[in-house]
Length: 109
Image (cartoon, rainbow, N blue to C red; front, side):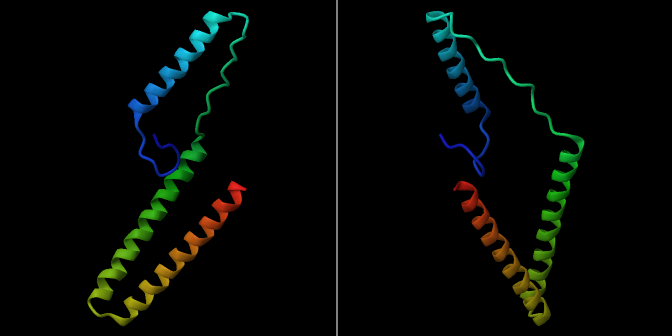
């Protein structure tokens, strides 16, 4: 099983893992009832601001994709300005991806 960013969510796999963990805890509790069960933390909920921020990020990403498609169509019609703008956008995306990769590597350390 794969877990983490970029992996498709699978509710059935998650259910199986939670069930397996619950069975292990139940067995341990039956064998040794002296082991205290830990209290669950209060559930984490997204605030209104977090939801709004996420929606804004999705909108921005969608708009960026629309702009890319526009310039691609124009460039395919031999528009030199469109080719230039498309090249700039692709270069910006590559720089952003490199920065994200560097940030991810720094976080892993």
